[in-house]
Image (cartoon, rainbow, N blue to C red; front, side, top):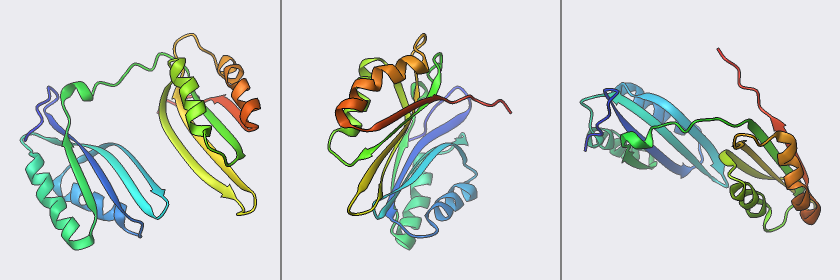
Length: 188
């Protein structure tokens, strides 16, 4: 199936999950490079013992999902990487306007259930759009520390100071440190 877009490109989402090992990114991007694909957006991370990648790619039309699938099938047979492909429709590529301020919210505290839920529920209820989220367990086995880092776009009119104040009750209830700071975009 070929994705039809007004920009003359076929767009696809590629999701890859594998047991972590060196070379996953290189193997994946080699396939895309050989095919002449462009990586428009990507996120990669290690989760436990697995490695996960999500890429948004494009290629000049005509280009089919079947061709992409054939190349990744060969990679799977050679390396065992699990690949999922999805054609993207034009309405899925429209970037949402970033009218509000971009900020980084960090949460540090004793590992306990509910940290991610409580913070993200409050942000969602206030129409804060989370654009990136990562968690890690650091510290020692005896004293584990849970770290939540998220990037978010505040709705128009909401300030970093107001966001910090809004998170104060959760900070007290969960006995965690919460920091909110603006991220200043840099034009190149």
